Length: 290
Image (cartoon, rainbow, N blue to C red; front, side, top):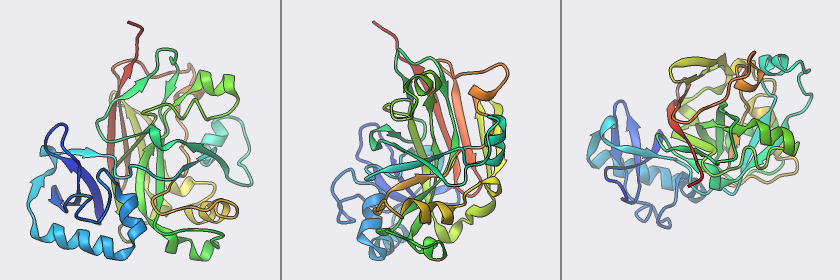
């Protein structure tokens, strides 16, 4: 299944849907799924397999709309946490002149940073060094604690795409990632959560463009620590809840390590794509002082 949240009209409450070929099949409101208004797919995963079966049953009997006629929203709304990795592609380590880390390097992004497809990334007035990062992310399907690698996939509901947007000046001055990667709108996510039966994460094409210029182009086979290793490492001491998102790191080609360095400017459009998951596109707006 390709689980989405969508609306037809501005200001309407998003509904669940299934993306089938070029159509969005209506799967009903959060309330119909027994969830609080505004809930995302994290609520479905918390309720267990029956919630997904109900979603599918509603989608079979209801109207389908052409994908271009609807607005997609972030599929996950309120995860308890977003865990992310730094320095997890071989070429990305090489472009920094660093050795691949022996263990995953973790940081967190706040759920308040999440936006969906076609939403604006808004850079605060004091941020002038924006840098996008395309990343494969997995979504937790059931409570995960001390999960061995061999059982990792049992705890994963599916996969989505994350743009780990970052302000490089703040990242450098703060010497850590909380502000630089945690501002509102700095975690575009989507366009869907694709259930694990439809995605094999070990060798997917992953790319990013800025205004049509290809900046990142790699395959997930270049991950230093794969999905199973990441889940095993994280859950040694951190409990992951249904709907939590784990972003697996970005490949080489980010702006800060180019020569000359290149950063995002007001009005530019970032397009991220991962094979089997889809496209996530966002325009950037620079805040200015009135």
